[in-house]
Image 1: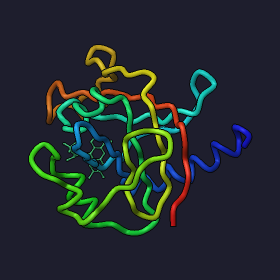
Image 2 (image 1 turned 120 degrees about the horizontal axis):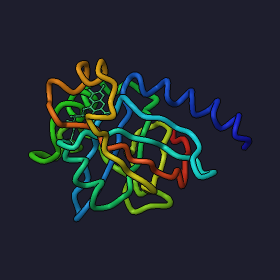
Image 3 (image 1 turned 135 degrees about the vertical axis):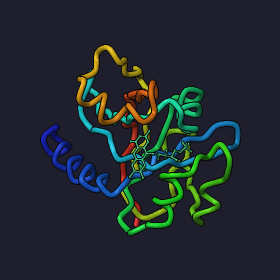
Image 4 (image 1 turned 90 degrees about the vertical axis):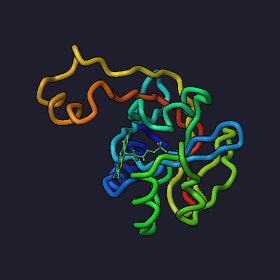
Length: 168
Ligand SMILES: Cc1cc2nc3c(=O)[nH]c(=O)nc-3n(C[C@H](O)[C@H](O)[C@H](O)COP(=O)(O)O)c2cc1C
């Protein structure tokens, strides 16, 4: 696949993210999924990279710090209940997957599983991470997005896309 075709396909998937995608992590026998609305797909170091932004207070953040792996699923069916639960409740206190009747399936290239729903799946290994710093951030963005939860800046995880595929 040429870089151009890859980007065209990636853009279609990213449009699906406006509805909410699912970022799945797992550590120590615990699997957790959270909704993400922000992210990007591109090239860095001549590698296909999925960049996810995860605030430091998310349970997912702790899991990602431990494993350095994640999967992202763009569902091709409507999952309103799962979006609601996985986008507002924390896996710190509950089994969100069980609560919304979702299950996972093994990934192909990493130990972290993917959601077992029809959709587009990305399997990623973190190559670099960096947490946003207040002093380097545009003032208007800071006021808009970081005033309600002061100091809770996103960590950007740059994950090499080791595999991506569609399930039906
Ligand atoms: C539509 C939507 C998009 C979201 N996007 C993000 C995101 O990109 N990054 C983030 O840190 N939280 C995002 N959230 C919030 C998390 O999904 C939410 O805080 C979740 O409960 C965290 O789960 P966890 O504590 O189990 O990790 C989003 C929520 C919704 C509903």
